[in-house]
Length: 206
Image 1: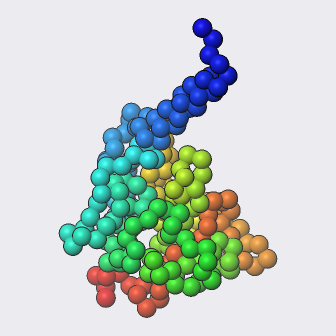
Image 2 (image 1 turned 90 degrees about the vertical axis):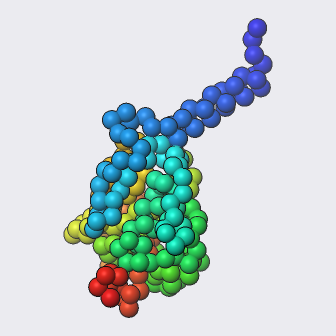
């Protein structure tokens, strides 16, 4: 018996939804195991997560500070700032896209993260160890965050957790100069966050 157009459309939507769930939640890279270290930057490990929406429980510090959901991108950047600098964000929850507050002026303090915020193309170049924020896209509606690991003459390198089953922990993005202002040439880069100068030394050097 033939399906009606309405039932056929619903069946197709259900099928597509199932495929989307599988792609974003399951580990399709059989060469890696969820939770295995794949990189490290300044002694802070980067772990493999499989599907971009996979979650392996919440990671809390011994004193109860929320680092995020293992092994999401947010968990890595918060763990990096905590282990490297002893930095705790005033708001310890939120998706990656929530790290960038569009209402703030360039260079203003982001009160939710306790970091200075710079807009991509706003006149300030990213620096090593800045926290860089990406807008959502079709396979990740929550956005993405990473750490700037290197600055080149015409590129930046980022180190990231949870780039997808076949993504790389390190990625280079072009850095352009437009009318004297640096801009990361990536359509989803919103900007970057940075610790204030008076707290720029690592905690073990204070």
